[in-house]
Length: 431
Image (cartoon, rainbow, N blue to C red):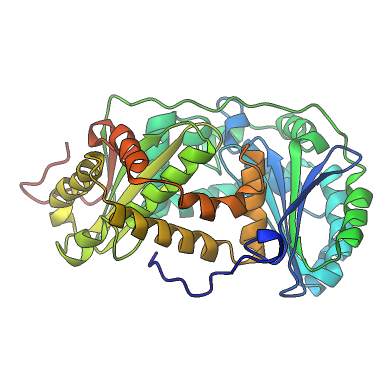
């Protein structure tokens, strides 16, 4: 993430970073929905968020949230599938710690016909044994592909270390054992209790006129039961007894990740964590950059913040040669130790603020990304308008506040390390 300001939008009407700010409304049936008008193209991007992701799955049934969500957009009518294909409409499903997501991308002229087909299927999906088994087989394949990638595997190992094997620490696609434990009744119950107006948020960025869009939402979401609002307490984290995890894998490179817990989600903690992520892996000025270009100890370096409802996690990771793994461990821990001293200067913080602001705006430049961000911010209690507040609130973080955060949360003594790769060469260590 190199901090260049090319393409950053200027505040538009009403002080919005874009021409029109997001608007939040509630249908007569109780569905919360967010709309932002964007006439930059004749494309509509929509995200339907369903509260209750991996943290809502019963013990031993990981993968249920994704399975139910995928099945809810499986269209049984071949004619309707063909209609969506002709219109070039794209549908996808995803699952996070605290929610599931259905994404819709289509030409604006086809959005109403897409909504008509999709909402009809979501309200009354076909949960046949054959369909369930087919999606389960696909999930096992997706899970294998995900964990074949060391970066993904390391990320979930860190989550599992801090949050346990259920909820946040579980696999999106479940395991062979957990999928066997999920039956049709489990899928039906998850759908009936979660796919309700009270538990969903619709977020849309479109060039469709507001009045026309309001009519569509009222018309096609009126058939959803309001249902009871479900509250899923966030999973709390804890330091595991084992702080270094090694998985042997046949590979020419070794992956090394170091993760730390973050405090409970709040606007301030999110912004501080966002800045910390840029300090770690935000391009040429980041603390990880010298490990690649000065010390030559890594091929690739990066960082990531995971911050659902509740506590989060920040991780830094790199890829190196097996013979350099021990040296990389020392260097990576040193990066965190230096930040934990809390000696960040005003100049260092100014660079991080500018980089973080540029990165955030570039990330949310597309309609699809903006619709997703607004839905997640709203569901997690930050409010959909946080997408507009965050860039300006970055400027309000001073060095004293940032250094206090780093001192509290960046001690490598509270970290977990994950290494994935070949056995260390002679003389190397894995403990």
